Image (cartoon, rainbow, N blue to C red; front, side, top):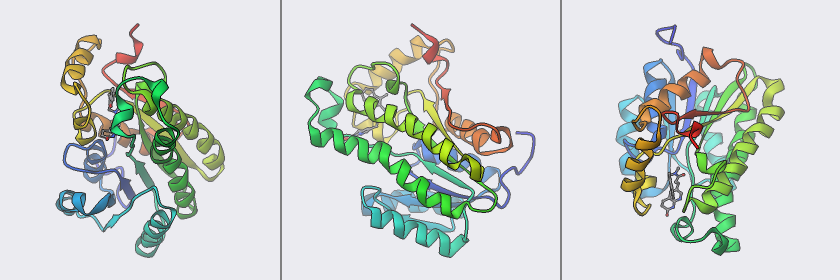
Length: 258
Ligand code: 0WE
């Protein structure tokens, strides 16, 4: 990056840190190094113990519980952000959920409820938080980032309903970019290669998938949370000022392969 502290004074709210391996944590660290002021949410008391020390290590100004399946929790969170900062510059949405049973076997077996849950948590939640962020990003615009995966575009065996939800997420990024563009709020997605995070720990044969993925990439190596952080910082920073509505890959080139 061309500047030493490109995010000096910028206020960033980060949703989706579960532990030190989280992609959201990779983004948080790069923003912190760039001088940003940070706020975090965690999902439930179990993750509070993991997230609190991480947040404190980057001098977080706000650490709040938030389950994005509830409108009142989203409202409460943004109320706290407004109280604390009276504005917002960067919003990072790095969360997804599908029932574990729906991430194996056949997509055709997805239940109505399984489909609803995956869409609600993994796609609709971006719309809900973008609406809240819009009112906090009034004066100088801002940048909204979300995380996607190649299964949104092409069939990745077992990714199933998450692929459908990520397709909806990427489409939501385009429609949000159109709506919020006049207010100079940019909305983008990062399509990351597979990383062994807490989310991945719940997936069968993930290690085998990781080594297969590595062999398939032009660069012959997998990516990590810091790679995601560097692209996130680019998109939120001076390099990204005229980039909106897009999905950018950090995948060692995997997506070019047949
Ligand atoms: O988006 C994801 C996974 C997100 C995820 C993970 C879990 C595990 C635990 C969503 N919901 C749950 N639900 C749980 O109960 N990735 C990009 C990682 C991932 O997940 C896969 C992959 C890849 C890559 C699942 C099947 C095949 C490939």
